[in-house]
Length: 344
Image (cartoon, rainbow, N blue to C red; front, side):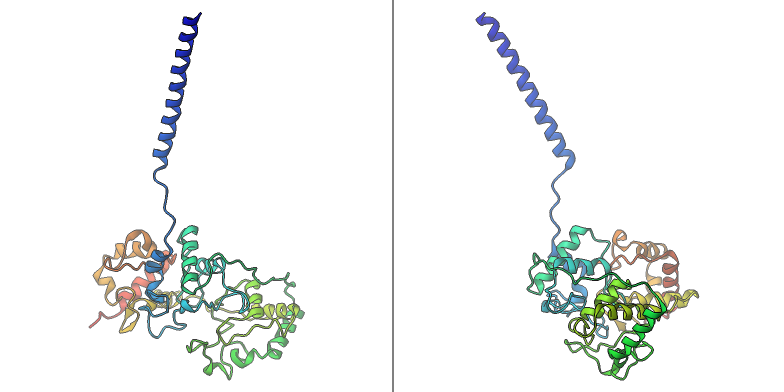
C-alpha cells in the first residue's frame, strides 16, 4: 500500500511540475511577443523638437521664428493663454491639449493631431510646468447654453447688439477689422494686436457657434478683446453669434496654380520658420532655390508626410509639423517656389 501511494505521489508531482513549466513557458512567450514596455512620452523632449523653434528653449517666446511674425510666439512662462477659459479660471492640461489638437487658426500655431494622445498629454503637462501651473489641476469650462435657431429676427437682434456693445470701435461697422481703434491695439505683452476681420479671416478660437459664443462671453485674456458676461445676457450673446455667422464670407482659395502656391505659403505661415527672399525665420532651412537643391519627387513626398520622410535639414533637431496638404496644394506650392529667382 505504501509503495502504491508513493508511486502515485511521485507521478502527481511530475504532472504538477510539468504543468507549472508549461504555464511559465506560456507567460515567457507572451512577454517576449509583447516586447519591452513602452516608456511614457517625455514632454520636455517633445517640446525641444516640436515647439522650441518658435517658443524658445525656455518657453519664453524667444525662439528662431520670424521676428516680424504676428502674433508672435507666446511667452509660455507667464502661464496665460489667449484661448483660455477666462482670467478667473486657471489653464488646465485638458485646455492646452485641446489647443494642441486644434491649433490656432490664422496664426503660425499648427495643429498637433499628428502626435499621439499620450504625446499631447505629456507636451501639455510640460507647457503648464513652464508657466508654473499645476498639470493635475482641474477646472470646469464655462457653460454654453443651447443656441437659438438661426432666424432673421435673431440676426437683427445680433446686429443691434454689435453696435450697442461697441464692437464697431475695433472691428468696424461692417466687421472688416477697420474700426477707429484698430491701429492702436496691443496685447499685454506689448505686441501689436490688430482686431480680426470678422468677415474674411479665420476665427482663432474656432468657427463653431459654441466657439464664437464662448469667446464673446469670456473674451481673450491678455488681449484687447473683452468678455461680455457681465454686460450682456446669454440670449444677447447668442444673437450676436448668429449675426457674426451671417456676415462670414471667407475668401476662396485661388485656382491659378502660382497664386494658389503663394496662398498656401501665406496661409500655412511657412515664413514663420523658413527664410525666403531675405524674410522669415531660421527654425528650418531657407526656401530660396529649394526646388533646385532637392529632388522634386522627394520634395513632394516630404510635404505630403514630413514626419515619415525625415528632415529638410538633418542637422537640426526641429521637426516640421504635418500640415495635411492636398496633392494640388503641394504641386502649387512647389510650382510657386520654383518660379522665384534663386537667392543671390
